[in-house]
Image (cartoon, rainbow, N blue to C red; front, side, top):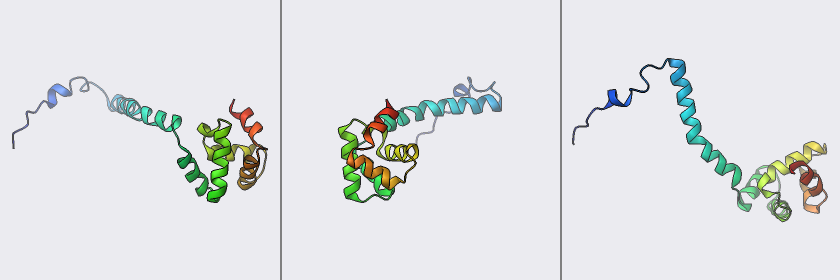
Length: 118
């Protein structure tokens, strides 16, 4: 194996005068630069499959989840997250998650959600 040229001293020049607090701040700054694009992708991109999966974990049947996702997609609300839409309708209208999901399926809760998200 070829011996590695040690360039540690050269690579640490910009860090050597930083205090522990400054190093910690620099670390978190770099971490944000790495994580922010991933979070951005997660916020801006979803699929019907992912949203159905979320609703299944919230206790809806696959038929209900499919109907909710289709309704939200039809009205341009799927990007807000199906689970989030069900939760917001449930919270704002003071009803159970199941009742909120059924309202979305029937089309009754759509106008409320459009008002919330626009």
